[in-house]
Image (cartoon, rainbow, N blue to C red; front, top):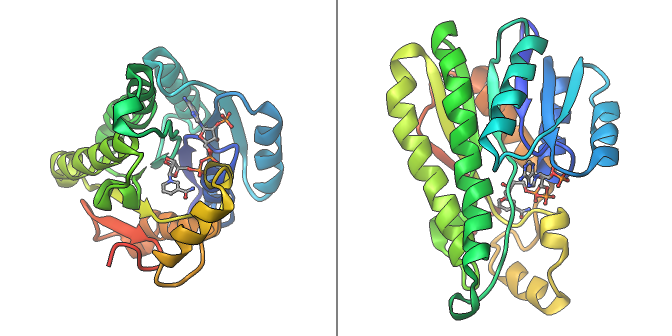
Length: 245
Ligand code: NAP
């Protein structure tokens, strides 16, 4: 990046979001990220982004008022600009359909779908005024392929793809790109809860035969947000060791 951009990353305190903050900072962006509860982890992310100015904000992306406050704080930090939005915050509430509670469906849709919607709606207003910007949404290979025990999560990540393609069409004339990254199985707290037997089964479904690292996803987000992504919009990049072949 030639000049310092302002990147707003949701769920930057841990896992993939943290790796995205660190990579974008290294590439020359100043960073605003949010976390929901992990204040100590957020401090750690701040320390790791040593090249950049960094602001960490506690905000629940399932709450529209929190999203508006997060966006206002990010815009103030960026002197009115937000160049990059990464909708990374996400949760799972896995269960077989017959046992899935309404609350498990609602919680996943509230964070993964509505959270991204609130953030895109708020930030795109700013980007439209700027006539530039880049939005990257975190989908999942599960949103492309489906997965037993994850009807709610698959629905949310397929919705992210639908929102990405629709908004890409809405914003293209103002030179704002909107893309999705669909990670496969990445080593984070989210996948750390898998039993050894499930993990072995999962590895069999990955042509590369190993799980990815958060940095594998961060590198692709940085590519889309940098010069490499300047003529790419409305795409879903599967970063999954071949799972979606
Ligand atoms: P993670 O390790 O569980 O971290 C989740 C992050 O999101 C944390 O920073 C958490 O903040 C934040 N967060 C959760 N709920 C939030 C809310 N309501 N409001 C604001 N922030 C919230 O997850 P991850 O594995 O890095 O996953 C990141 C993204 O990649 C998610 O969208 C996930 O669905 C997607 N993904 C992951 C994988 C994988 O294999 N790991 C595969 C495909 C897609 P706190 O720490 O404060 O709670």
